[in-house]
Image 1 (cartoon, rainbow, N blue to C red):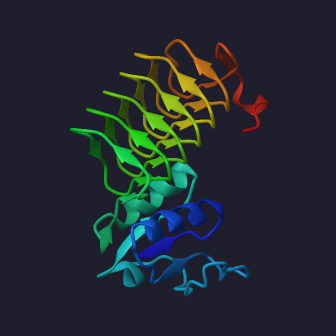
Image 2 (cartoon, one colour):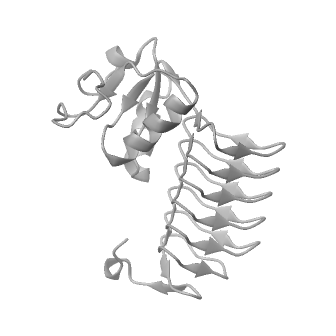
Length: 204
């Protein structure tokens, strides 16, 4: 397995890979990291030559960057879906290619999770939720049943989204927010109950 990215989020991806007795050939980054806690081999910048004939995953938390890399190399090598050994996946669940399910995460029956998503530590995606491509559900966040989340959206740590709510594309839900009603594309919501604010006012 080759990692693209070797910063904070990559450490979580590495733990997930190792939990399933997977192995890592090395990592790709713009420059070689000075700190290398897992003693991984530096493979240079991501490229067709590096990824060809290899399994790989993008270990980067930023949705837009992850999306760009996956779209650029989706036909090269074998993009992988990683599920930590302690994650729970219910019946009739669909998980898109390039998605990472972190330690203690739960995806329940009939849920659909898109491509290149992160369902982070102890996050819950309940029954019949639909999570779009390149979404990040942060640690401890809960999507109650039948929630829809549009592509490139971010659900902050310990946020809760009520049953049946629809979250648009490119939405930011602040940490700890309680979302009780639909959120349009491109908006940021914070608080309990969650309200829309100007994006420049939030620091997540």
